[in-house]
Length: 274
Image (cartoon, rainbow, N blue to C red; front, side, top):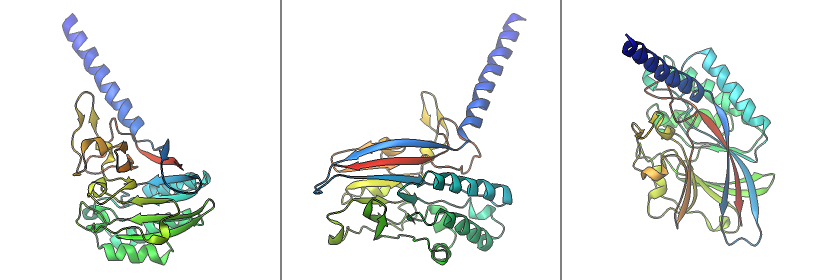
């Protein structure tokens, strides 16, 4: 009888641990990170950058209202630059009216204005008429970068942002920074961090896509990460001799409606170029 009671108590403790952890990890919080970079500028630069990725917004007014609140929360912190790194919609097969859903997402994301912002598409946008997503974002004055570079004016001065197409859906093509970006801060955004490991890519790259595994078990790590990026670059900060890669855990979920060991978050990156 005592053994049965002990087994029940142990099972209850394990269940409670997972239940509390999953509920905690589903609540989106701000993650703050300092990134220091070396460059050949004549003076130092600093930039506060908000990173939002992998919203995976489903149909319905309640998820849309939560997304609006998140955008307003991020806006209230007044970052110098806002970067959206893809996967704004949930699975296209689960969306009843993608035209309306696409419009709702774009209209919510435009609430970040007048803060300077730029975005790339994720694999879920690539699977649901990427040209229509680009058109919808353009209608609300949100700029999508697909293998191109844009010089953006911030309160700290100009910044060059290079946006690569999503590697996971084969929309990636390498482009170099133009000469006009040589003397100002540069950064790259993309969805799948695998793009950062094209041999030509260097410098700072900011990505999403992995959800940091979404479910990371103690001692085993993530169950599955859909990226060809090396495991060390699946989550958080990765640094080697050529590049610095930051991969956000993201906000939403896909396939399984839960998170464990990979909290939902948006990121405030305080970047310093010395």
